[in-house]
Length: 143
Image 1: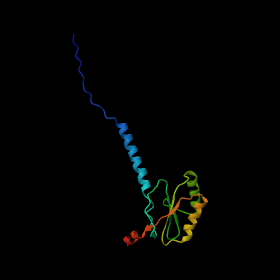
Image 2 (image 1 turned 90 degrees about the vertical axis):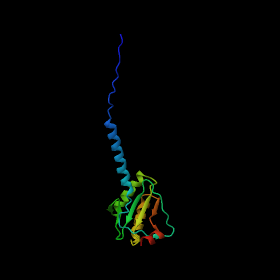
Image 3 (image 1 turned 45 degrees about the horizontal axis):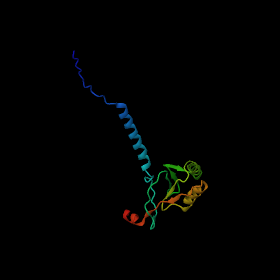
Image 4 (image 1 turned 180 degrees about the vertical axis):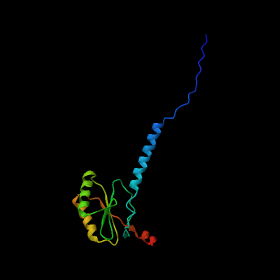
């Protein structure tokens, strides 16, 4: 007796759950990356120029503090008082030691506010501080 086996090609099912998982992970990745790419440059801060200014590469965990022309201090699109800024910087120094602070001061802003921000950084024991400035060539090209 001869038994013949007939193999039927069953259509393979596409597994949808792993595809949906990959889609959500990719979406989450792009949402996180896009949130970190906006550097507070949308604020109306006219940076001063410096002949020794060099472009810096962004590092993870940088915090941008903006000192506006009228003396307001803005961090993460939120206007803050010196006391609120001190609390935030204390938490940052505790959670992320060695983090970088970049002060973006308007060229027409009062120096007193920038010194107050520096004082807050010093009280929080943050020493990696820099000021944002444009190269003189970039300022001349923008005019």
